[in-house]
Length: 404
Image 1: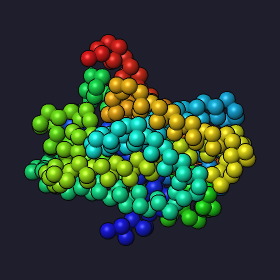
Image 2: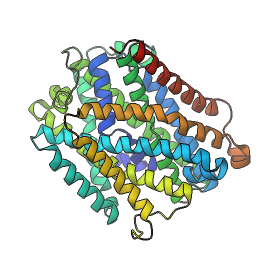
Image 3: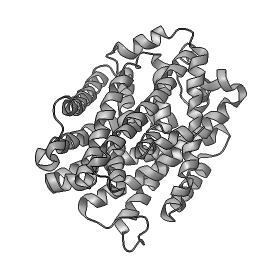
Image 4: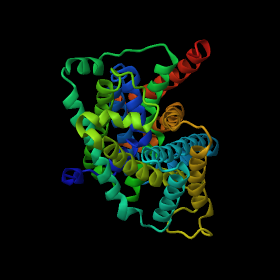
């Protein structure tokens, strides 16, 4: 079953981490609370993500450097501080979401949050610092294959696909805070700052060159379409199962019910396996990528193979992100679904800072030469950054005027 996935490269791991606990929950809440009304955002964001990921791949292949390294070299310390601070904040939010997802799964089976959080923390630290993560990565990716259950469930419960097609291509914008909140969250969890830094670092680390661009572009396009189709089917499934029943998804039990038409009494277990796999991928990869980017940007020693005394900032940042994520999840009376969705909104609000940096870099002919972006490829990144900023401002205004 996994054989077709072997054609993918860095893009698959990047996008798989995007469909993590925060992503699945945000898509589920979107479908459960607004039916198909938010579906139109996914095709648009898919195009934007393909263009942005391709730009990062091209930057890395042409220059041989990661995104953080390029930002420091071209824009100086002040702009680097802004980008790195926003990226680190978004990364902490995403890491928190991974712990929240694991804690939510634990609650499905009556396991206390404290037990799940401490166990996940210990496992992630052990796998990453001991260099064992790569051996388990395929296992975690294999666990996320259960997300195909959303595809099967959507096909099973959707009698008429014309409304789905219409909702996918006809925008349905609402000026209420809940709708705008989820719209920013859907964009934030689909694109994410982390994806851009991770794929650029992965490509540069592999020593890719401009001659490799056709293969890398294919990887980006196929991986993005694959991941975002899963996202679309999650929205459709919850829109067809939970929305008519008035189930808003306020906990993992309600989210798992979306798979009941396919899995029956085993829906909870099926849902849990996917969330555990994706969350462990995210909790391992996201904080490492953020630590790597920050240290790369400021020229500090980095690498999990380094001893702590040789790379204290790198390993310290990695562990600090895990600690903050775990502590937030353990706060009394905190809503796990609230954490999962809010962290994706945070990423959406902060994302334009990273997008502006990417647009300026990839459009720089002095840096990229004949590989510099021009025309629509560059405009799409700028439009995405501007539109997301406008949506964030609109969300703030609507929330202040009409909090309900």
